[in-house]
Amino acid sequence: MTRTTDRLATSPGPHSGPGGHDRLIEAAGITKWFGSVAANDDVSLHLDRGEIVALLGENGAGKTSLMNVLFGLYRADAGTIRVRGEEVDIRGPQHALALGIGMVHQHFTLVETMTVAENVALAPSLLPGRPRLDEVADRVHELARSFGIAVDPSALVGSLALGERQRVEILKLLYGGAECLILDEPTAILVPAEWAGLRDLLMQLAADGRGIIFITHKLGEVMEIGDRAVVLRKGRVVGETTIASASRERLAALMVGDAPVARHVERRDPPSADVVLQARDLSVMAGRRSRVTAASLEVRRGEILGLAGVALGLLLLFGAYLISAPAIYF
Image (cartoon, rainbow, N blue to C red; front, side, top):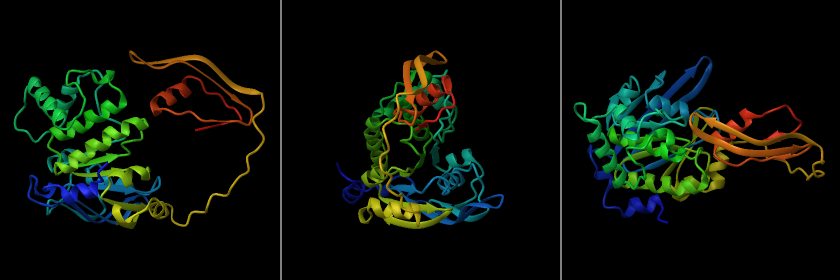
């Protein structure tokens, strides 16, 4: 598969898209305090047209706080932001969207009882007037076809899988005219097989001239599609590099700093036969949808039980049946 850096080098010009400015966003000296804690401390970052920037760092490093400043959810205590070369004071998310900055959060902002087109119609847009719902549906269909997004504008959002809902959120931003798309941990809710579709979509959006910032902990994704990586640690930028000159090991070292190396632990005796937690045929409904169907599990004393799957189903399973036991879950 073609890397993003190669695509930008050979593409006939994502930097010549609408707006006329190569640099979409330039943030300088951003500082954000929460009480006595500096979530962001003198952070600078830029995003160019047609570029995919990975924002890396451990939990609590300040990644989401920084993006919330760019999207207008937070007001910076210090620093400046320029959008397409003009200094701006982003007063809120609607103002950010008017400036062409959109954000897909980890927790979606969709109305499940409404259709895809109706959800898109609710989103702020740079289009003049108030288009009719059928016009919105036509535009959604056009955008979905242009970028290969498999979403039916007439489908109820509540009937969609999580990956499909994420695409609806992206469609909302595209419909609204966003040139800069921020995605906060976009693959946290996806099964591995869904990554390829999101990867291709992000690369196509970048090739179309949009700039993308995505927060992730998955270095394989960064190496696959990123142009640059910016690494935060304890609220400060500790490294910035092109992906072409980076390695997973180097990026991981920047993320964790001088964290102690995990010591090797010898495998202990196998778990005992003593079952300390047992569940049989658990089912969970969320609205009219079945989230968990006839799930069974058991945990033995001294055992570590791993559960794999999309987060929502696992949370509902634990919510349906959870007792204290000398076992570890992940």
